[in-house]
Length: 284
Image (cartoon, rainbow, N blue to C red; front, side, top):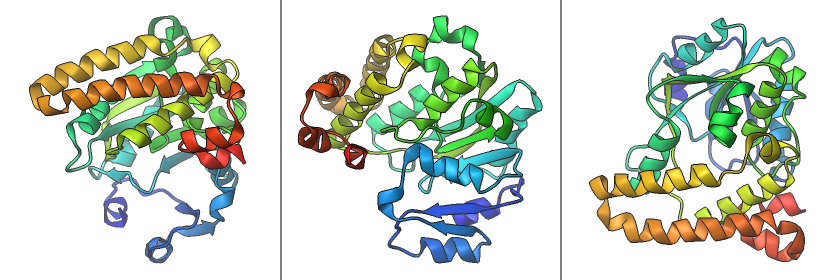
């Protein structure tokens, strides 16, 4: 990671790392690389709140690039290509392409190819009718924000179970800005989730869609996009990994059940919700 950051042709003027309880040499390595380190206890980490903390700690930054610890720039121009999106004054947020990490299994590989195509695009609020909830798809694993647009939209919301990026992108589009997906700004980032982890993640997604005011109402339900994903996944596995098809079918049912359970979370006991979801601290 540090080597890939040092190789970037665009070197950010400030380099901030927020560490929430790493147990390896992360702090030392990034400190040696010139980063400003801010440490918080794991109990204080919040998907939106912690990122807004980073924004607030860089009050003079016109643009802010976010990169998670497991996303590795795939080429030296990744940052430069991403920030180039802001040459269009209407763009408030841009995110890059995520490639499967080396050794990713066919399920994880397809997920990245499906969600991060090789062609760039720009979305605005007027695209909601055509693309539904996919209009505001965005990932803070590798994304950049125009500070003025983010703050006009209210910043990152705290107390979200996940997807602070898509919620922020929705608010930015509602405020009149555009979202730019930059396919030639690439990082390696994927997850070989187990079936249990996949279940927990989709439970959390269901919770988000039930609790994030206005997201589903304005941009639509995700069921159509889910069907498109399943068809695409089966077609990909027929070509690249037919042995994974039974697992994919089981996971499809599991993810749907998890999502529906998350959507009715208000009817479930608190202790059960902690066990069903990935972000158990959300229920504290």
